[in-house]
Amino acid sequence: MNDELIALVRAPNPSAMTLSGTNSYLIDCGEGHALVIDPGPAIESHVAALLDAAAERSLRIAAIALTHGHPDHTPAAVPLARKTGALVYAHPDSSIPHDRDLELEGELRIGTRTFRVIDAPGHTFDHVVFYEPQAQTLFTGDTILGEGTVVIAPPGGAMRPYQRTLERLAREFTQARTIRGGHGPLVQDAQTKIAEYIAHRKEREAQLIATLADAPRTIPELVARMYGDTRKTLWPAAARQLLAYLDALREEGRIEATPLDRALTPEESALLNPAWASLVDPELAKVIEAELGASYRIERIEAYRLVQ
Ligand SMILES: [Zn+2]
Image (tube, rainbow, N blue to C red):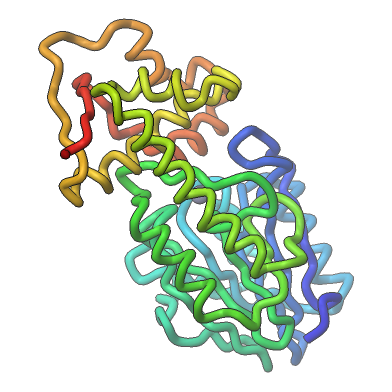
């Protein structure tokens, strides 16, 4: 399968969370059939663009597959399936209504194409990655993006499963040449990108442990020390990200958390539980709340310390 058989149709939903917009992929699977991976948001012009991309290639969209259930990746499945009769495939545990469960660690066959279905928890527990062996490409959803890093935020996201997923991709998919992520540009060197992602997580964790070495600290204190050169508007995302590392280290008995005997200050509350809906438009607020696990409110202020 050469690369011309894979069309990128980018949705018009750019933001800090979605970069230049959600990437939807339309893949010519032979026999006049197309597969859409991640149909994206239900924006009318985006659904029309996907239908046009199929029509230009004389293809019928026969199947829609979801990498995960976040609201910037899935809602267009409904109008697209209604217009084409395509079957919607998703992770067996996905809460998104779908016609067929993907067979984890099995295959998805559409037309003459076969995709490996890789169980890839981490960004969400119900995330899958697809591998197409002829194009030697990985469709990674929000597990690996074309640029920047991914937010891993509890309760949907978890750090150790995410790191295991990355390590597994590095170990088992050495033949992968390219990565087509859920956001950002095409990654031309899959192996280097996966290695960078693995290294980035280890570096951040080492930095976190070093920041806790001299004194116990709260999440807001950690954010101020570790993300001093990051825009403050991104600090709430950084706080959620740190929570994922802290949860992992706590489960492993490497750190302890002591609740402080006081309420959150307004500044701490604004950082830990920001009112997204008042900051951005409601559609984007939905995406941010899903990506950052914002329904999970942090009600107690705790000081984290290393277990010696
Ligand atoms: Zn996502």
